[in-house]
Length: 425
Image (tube, rainbow, N blue to C red; front, side, top):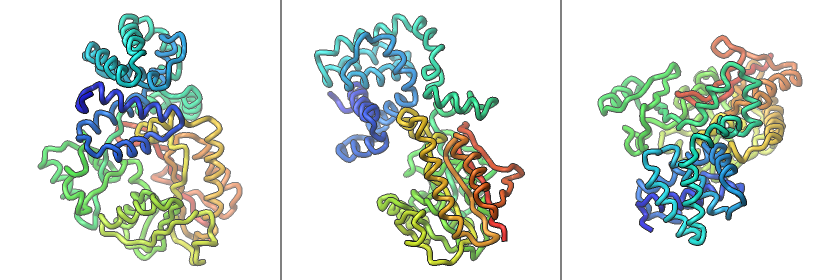
């Protein structure tokens, strides 16, 4: 099978999808695959990634289609291949004949005795598409391409915006840039993009959202640290921390370091960046090196305060806590199908533990910015409400005139929640 053929890409993408259906992490599986195949061209890498990510964004629909068409379970490898092929049929209907033929070639490589089954299922889908689609409209997971429990939670919390948020969560994510102001102005960098013919939108927080994604190697001055790739929604953190020169600042859950770097680019502060995972800590250091930044990076659990705090209070704390990542699921579509409803309470308990541990390290009059990339209230508004009930010295501060900011997934940014707390003196 040729590495530049659709059959090859279908096969490799199906292997990634199969690993996710077995409970694996999509990004980890993809990176491990690339490590085993350094000979792959950029085109092959892109094709495999596009198919795997697209299939999992649409898994709710593909799974429902197969439930309609299959009378008995198939081996996981063939089931995954059919999911990938169905995604390709829906995303490229003009290539239907080629997709079916290439999927059959892939099946012959994966499990030859079942290539006829693959052929039959795909052709049955094409023959009965209208009727099958009519049935899918009654299936929430198929129609919205999110788990039904996810849909219901979003509908309850955001009755006027839930459908738009779900639709955005199924789209390809935007690519946004953050300009390193220590190495040039936003205006100058924007002018370079324009001169190179690269379309973009400049948002209110100075994020530059590209009209079309670019390889980082093609970005002006990327290797020299003049810009970073960071979602536009994430670029509010440094602004809403209310930074000033000389402050002592803590980023308690810092990896991969984008928000830490933005803090250092915004004001000359003394930053301590904590991260539990050693590999992710190295990524923070790598990012700082490219951008010409310096901070104290420590590999510790931020909740174990006695092991890392020297007793000197912080003026500002960024608590970008672990969460369900429900606001960034279009970048990590396996999240939608691996998360379970009871996971949200588990994350909320972890977040509460982090907040309670960090609060004593904040100076009187200092500010803590609580951040998640979640769209679920239990991790967001309810979390902050419970925290303020436990801590009488916590005062909520407005963010641009609002008590908190919930960004739902949209064309320009992912989903984030921000709440700013001050410690009463």
